Amino acid sequence: MTNVRVRFAPSPTGPLHIGGVRTALFNYLFAKKHKGTFILRIEDTDQTRYVANAEQYIIDALNWCNIPFDEGPNKNEKFGPYRQSERKEIYKKYAEELIAKGKAYYAFDTAEELDFHREDHEKKGKTFIYNWHNRAKLTNSISLSKEEVEQKIAAGEKYVVRFKMYEPEVEGEKETITSTDLIRGEVTFKREILDDKILFKSDGMPTYHLANIVDDHLMEITHVIRGEEWLPSVPLHIALYEAFGWKAPEFAHLPLILKPVGKGKLSKRDGDKLGFPVFPLEYVNDETGDISRGYREDGYFADAFINMLALLGWNPGTEQEIFTLEELSQVFDLSRVSKSGAKFSPDKTNWFNQQYMMLKSDEELAELFTEVLKEKGISKDKNYITKVVSAIKERATFVNDFWDLSDYFFQAPTVYDEKAASKNWKEDTASLMLTLISSLESIEDYSSLNIENIVKEWITSQEIGFGKVMQPFRLSLVGAMKGPHLFDIAEMIGKEETINRIRKAIATF
Image (cartoon, rainbow, N blue to C red; front, side, top):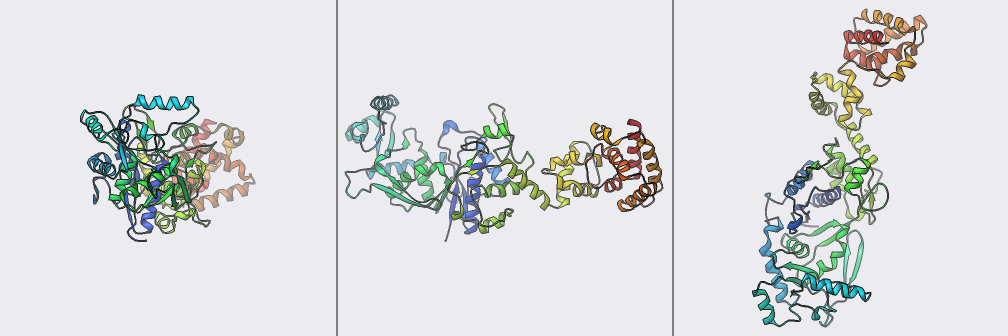
């Protein structure tokens, strides 16, 4: 496979849904596997839904996911511009070419006229479709004379350009359109039941269909990898390629990402209801001020997020689940993409983040945790923070979990778990703790192993029972029955702090 060129072509109508991110990812992986080019094109022909900060959000999201585009707005503009709103004159030229070839026509039907036809058909139990069956009876350049058409255009009457999807009167006209989808296999559509889609409007803006085909051709796109919602557009797109005399790219339509509970496509509402984000980055609506959660801000690692998305609707054919981006680029194959929807799992997403947590070095995680500590006004030696991270990271899913798992390494407990205190602090506990203090005060080598040996030797010699000392000892240092090895905690906070915390617990209980 040579000179592979794929594109991700979102509309800047708001934040990028994770379904869109997955489409971008699969395009990126396909391009990298075949040493091709990954292009970003902004499809902003629908100006009524345009959102000013959406394009930058899309670019920022791709960069955070480490799947940057090779060509696109302001970057390697080999076939620019890459915003469709800046390519209007190009589309007009090709719309006129189709009209000249007799493959498209001007239509002047008003909204009111079309509504009348729809309602009239509904009364008769039929569905109104603007196509070969009735186009000659409607207000267009097929039913009107050339002079009438020219007069209407000169008078500034609004019009659209419609594509002739099926012309049964033309000799050799194919009755079906067949496409071999790289994921779904052969798909066939009957031309006669399809409508004459609008390609261009008199305000100078193309519809998605014309702009999409023209841009894919001019940008030399070899493979169109997009969501399955565009599958019904395939016959029109193939027919347009045929009308222009162009070679069509290969198509692959990805399955939907489904909601975790119930049926249907994953939506923002599902995330809000079940407590997880559906956007890669936090998004602030400039008009309403509403804030939508993002995976980055919620503490997910970009590589964990991407690994999770890659396995939503695709499988490598092995038991392997953890992949680097480079590994994904090597093994990704469209033939292993599922035809059916992939159910999203928040729990599985968290599992991926926890797995990546364990793969990262203590030093890297310590850097991230340092920022959390700074926000709390806590400053500690980097080596100390690294040791803390090493001790508690197995219990964490996010870096933001570190504080709740390790606060006692940085400050003495101010409250104690009531249930643990009731169970483990008895009448004789204060006396035992005072004796423990005396034992700790005499230790010169205050290392975890040495502290443990001396304390356990004392407990054994007095035949006290380990639980009567160890449990209140942990409660004194931590404030609860949690945390790593108790003597590791004692070593890290130091002898003086250990003793001070025991004295505080004695005074409290």
